[in-house]
Length: 65
Image (tube, rainbow, N blue to C red; front, side, top):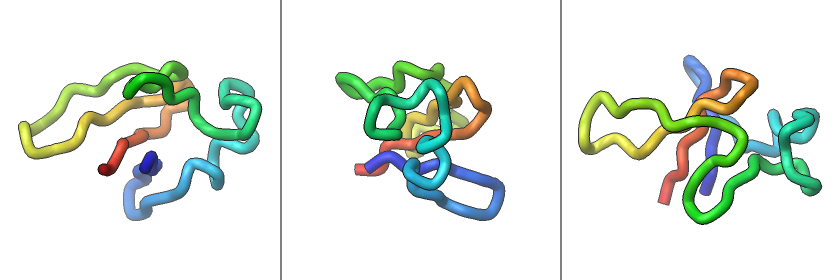
């Protein structure tokens, strides 16, 4: 499940990506084969953290399994 991390909140992508020009046709992040296609990987601070991505709009996105 993809979530967007804010300073003090966790948001569903539907709350943010619906109005993004880079989102797919259903208003979701462009997530393909385990990677965010509309962003880049952010370095992890520890091995226990999930991989984080930063989208082109500046939001942090995490895939929580």
